[in-house]
Length: 468
Image 1 (cartoon, rainbow, N blue to C red):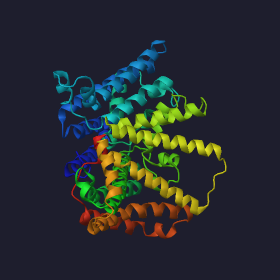
Image 2: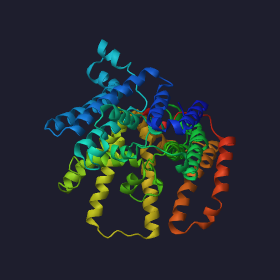
Image 3: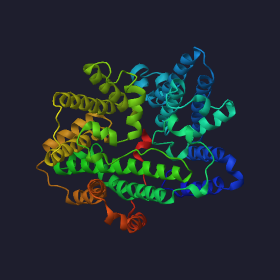
Image 4: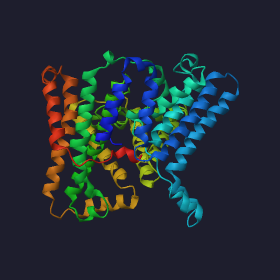
C-alpha cells in the first residue's frame, strides 16, 4: 500500500478516528497493530505470516532474556539474533544461494521462486535491536520496559515491529528509542504544525520531485543509456542522485509526520546530506537510522576504533560492505559498500596525518562538490545492479562525448532537481542567519507545495527503498 494512494489515506483517517475515541484509549496499541497488519497485507496477504513469525521469535527470545538472569540469556540472545539474520538471508539472498550452490537442480528452481517480502530488511533489524538491547540492558531497565506478562510484552513487541508508518522502508527504529514511548496518547497533544510540515514536504519530494525525475532517469537502464551522449549521461546521474534523495527522504518525512499524529516520535533519517564536505559527515546525514544501527550493532561490536588504527580501517570496510549487502544480493551493492568503506578509511587515515583541518570556504566548497560527485557516481551501482552494466555506463560517458546532447532531457532533469538544491541551500541559509524572512512566509511556502502536489505530481511509482 503506497503512501500516495487513496487506500492509504482512507486507512490513515479511519485509524486516527478510532484511535482517538476516548472510550477506546486503552486499546490504542491494538488498533495500530490491526491497521499495521492491514497495511502490510494489502498487496500480498500471505506474507503477513512471515511478519508474525519474525515478531513471535523476537517476542519469545526477548521475553526470556528480559525476565531471566540465568547464564542461558546469552545463548537465547544468540538464537534470537541468528534467527533474524537467517530469515533475512533466506528471503533476501535465496536467488544468490541458488545460483551459487544449487544451480540447475530442483532446490535451485525452488529458491529462485521465493519472493522478497517488502520491508524484511527493516523489521529484522528492529528485531535484532530488541534482542540486543534487552540482553545488554544498556539503554533501559528491563524491569520497567519488559512486562512480566507475556501477553503484554507480545502486544508491545508486535506493535514495535509492525508500526505501519515505518514498517516497509524505515526509518529503522531501535527498541530503546521506541518501547519507552508506548503509553496512552491524547488528541490534544498532537503537534499538528510539525506533522503537517513533515508530511507536506515529504509528499512534495516524492510526488513532484522523485516521481517526475524517474521518467527521465529511466534512461539510465541498460541498454538505453548506450545511445546517449556523455553530458546527458552525467546529467542523468545527477538527476538520479536528487531522485533517490527526494524519494527516500520524502518517505522518511511522511513516516515521521504520520507517526507523530499517533503520538510517537521517530528520529530524523536525513539531515541535508548533500552539503557534506567529508564521507564521515555524509554518513552522519544520510539514512541516519541505518548508519547509526550499523555503528551501534556492528561496527562497535567488531571493536570500533578501540583496537588500533589498522583494525579500525578494517572494521569500517567490513561494516560498509555488509551495509551494502543489506541492500541486496548483488555484486554492485557489495562494491558500493566497499567504495564507501574505503573512502571512510582513507579519509580517516589522512585526517589522522593532518590534525589541522582548514575550514576556509573555498576549500569546503571544493570538498563538498567532490563528496557529492563521488557519492552520485556510486549511486549508479544502485540503479544498475548488474555490475557489467555499470562498467558499460562509465565507458559510454568516456566515449560518447561527440554525440549531440539531449537538451530536453537535460533541462527537465535540472528543473525537477532544483527543489533538492534549494532545500540544501535553505539549510545553509538558516545555519548562518536567523531565517526570520523565511519563518514569516512559511505558511505561504507550504501552501505553494500543496498546490504543486495537486498540479505537478508525476505518475505514481513505488518508493525506491521498497526493493530493499
